[in-house]
Amino acid sequence: MCMLNSSYGRFQAVFSRLNQALGVLIILVFVLSGFTNPGDLDVDPVHIYSAKYRIARFSHAFHGKRQQYAQVNFDVDADLTPLWNWNTKDVVVYVVASYTTPENQCMLSLKNVYTDSISHPFHEYSNSFANKEANYSLHWTVSPKIGLLTWGKSASSSAPVSFLPVVRKKKTTKHSSKTSNTASSADR
Image (cartoon, rainbow, N blue to C red; front, side, top):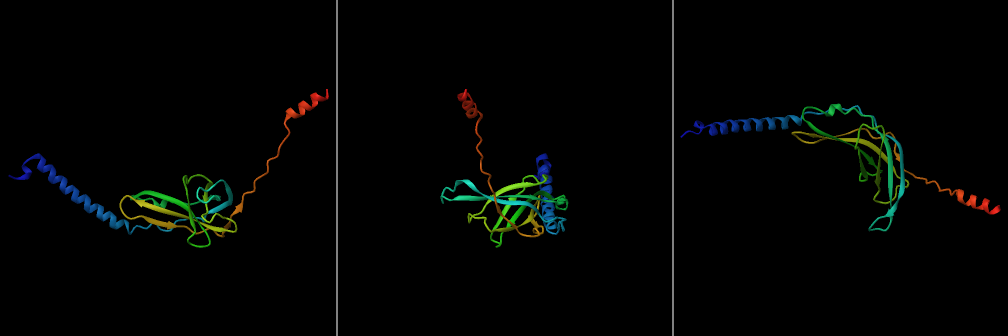
């Protein structure tokens, strides 16, 4: 008895051939996506408006020390359209703050690329931002639909940026109007 005599057998044979063709197509796309390079992107260095640090209001649970947090305000001007092609699923863009040694890097993720200036807090494991400088660079990761991840990096900021301490203004106490009213009524 031949398998192609029934409609189920014919459907199974056609579906098997389609799966083979799809498998060959996926392998071909995987191999060719390794040769596609987004090329050089026209990305300006990251512009840092301010880099300040402050001591947190609470202490760390294990150390009993107060952690220092840095707040960096930066601006990114980048044309990322060459990263998008028919095989691009997702593009992740992030800013990396690099300290004096390559082991000290902190990633500042960009949640919304379209805003003018973005501010992200981060902390230092050595618990001190004093006398530290950082260079900032834009990085990206392209996730293809089929294929391997690709990474890229822009030029670093032109000069290292020092972290400045946040100077808090002292609270001034104003005399309330009740005390002046009670004093004037006592004079009467």
